Image (cartoon, protein in one colour):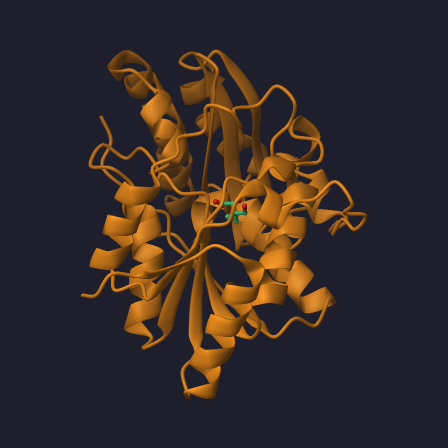
Length: 294
Ligand code: PAF
């Protein structure tokens, strides 16, 4: 594998992507905030397996963090990330400065309605606008490509997919399965904030999803019962639970009180020791059991 080319300016990124297309290639784009784990690497692998020329971006986007969130302490490990991407055959890495991507003169925000009102929306005001604005900017620089995202951020992928459709962007969005550690914990850059005891407590999210998934596969279709099964695993272990909720897999509209028709997504967000974790399972798509559990 050869060392990925490092790009830092908008002009260089645009020129490189144009060059790949003019040479007959297709760009496979993996947008990230760095602190890469096996889940990110699987996105790069998915791109490589499709025979694409893979570009990864590493940018901790200030627009998607709230005032009391972890922007300052978000892990930054560019050189280690670059080594990992090299092993996955990534051809180029776009790692811009904040000034390159965000300027005080910016007056445009991309905002996707409705989808952003559910799940994390009320708990992270402005977060999805920050995500869709930076991803729109990246897509505009990269141009036509296949873009890979992890399904652990289910709502994020739904928002980005909607944005690309509504704005007629020449982008194919691919959602890849959530990767889990041996014990079932969904991989996340924020897992490194957890000490061993907290990590053990955090397994309650996967346990909750697992319990609901088993019930679903045994025939349970009452949304409230499935949510109850997941919630009772999580509430006793986590400091606070933002939500345990079932939504339609496309619109994310709440399914509370209904009898389920798949596909539907059961999503959880909960915090422990200042670390907010999310996880989900999609009934009708994800297999059961969802991983190994303590
Ligand atoms: O999922 C992430 O890492 C980020 O939200 C993304 C898509 C790179 C936008 O900053």
